[in-house]
Length: 185
Image (cartoon, rainbow, N blue to C red; front, side):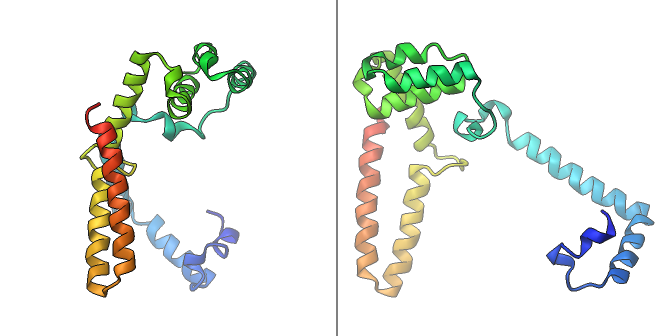
């Protein structure tokens, strides 16, 4: 890093330039230290690669990574301007499977009766698998939400805050309704 940029980094603001240069030279001249840092970073990167499978990336996590082609944009316009009963037919024209996936999900949420029964069931089961997962997912799940509610309920019971306890109980009932909707998927 060039010296002129050091003053812009708030973590280094309490140090003067000569001190930063001195520390930099110590690090740059210590091969053993640099090798230990490389080793730590390599282990962290390796662990991250092992624990995050690229096969398990959900389309929702890629929404900002790709832009639609002009052809896909035209299909999107047609999709949004057609009747619900015809949307799945228009959606099948998408080349990008993410766009097709989002079209399916939109129809599922807004007009589920417009989907073929087998497609509705497939989407319903996928949502159930995601929201009922007992694993520590990157998104909130019903089990995680129950745990959060229980923790907050304990906190507010200790504080004697009956209003928040009532709200948490209402939220718990709402989650139970969602869970019932998806538990037999």
